[in-house]
Length: 294
Image (cartoon, rainbow, N blue to C red):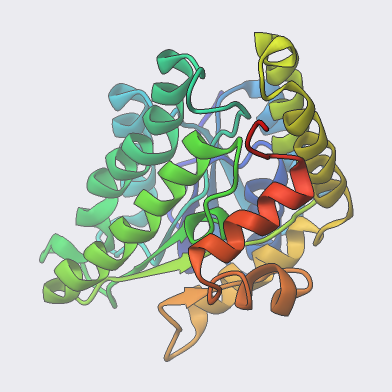
């Protein structure tokens, strides 16, 4: 991939995981709104698809959040385009999700979630903090970090334990980063979407088909859960709606610490996050057939 290091006079943002879904929609939306967007993808084909039909200054870059060398190369590309200016924003969106009961989910599968969703997020954040504001030789206002978390960062659903564990971690890391980076004026904001029309759940379904869960004691409840998640993922918000929230988080003079763009927010987020945990246990049990044996 021929990387564009042309100097930019626009506000500049880096978006990880921009091949599809929320990342792609956010990258295209911000570019159309006047941002210079470095959009992290892992393959040239994804870069070509992302650019197709896009408007504004959208610059795909090869970026694998699990590989230090890839991250360092991306930082160098962005730094050259910035000159001595600061990076205005970093959107940590890259993530994976695979369904499975924690009691029997392979540890390698669990670890893969953390490699991308947690260690990848921190690796990228640490690498870009100097461009965002810790490098005192750079000019301009300090930038903002926007971490894409999830409803799962507040509500631990069954069969998504690996995913929700990482999203709980992302929520905590965002709060810690915001408090620690006050010394540089760098803000850190969480955006926790609910159901979004994104390929992540189709990928999760395909991955689950390869696992032996169907013959496990959780086979029937997991199948019910899978269908509910897929239905929600196919009828949820358009990803560009999350991109608009990200824009608000980046541009609002007084941004919230956390945004929750969730369909049917009262029943899907507000009430469940306030119910006693045992009540929520019973709701999940009833909905997905998770009952004690007689």
